[in-house]
Image (cartoon, rainbow, N blue to C red; front, side, top):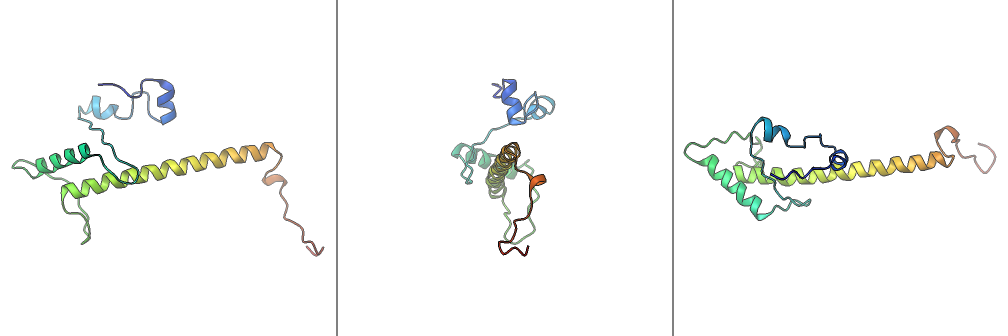
Length: 135
């Protein structure tokens, strides 16, 4: 298996541990990890959808077991396939939103550093004076 996070700077920049994000699943639990391609707007690759169909068929099989906890609402998904496709699409969108929020925060922090170096800041701020001379 090829390790995608071979360099320390790549791991550090991504926020992953030195052993990688799936180390526990692969080495300790001996689990199979299947990467899935999911687009940020919720689109899922055909190979991923096929694999989810295979898992759904396995769960429905004679000795299969579906331990999924489905929602109680009338509109909640009740099939393995629909539920897991919805969860994957939602996870991609939430992950993208978190990344956008993180970048906005980084940008705001950079702007604040620039403003503070330029002499601006909360310590030197005073309310604007009224032009009429009353305030």
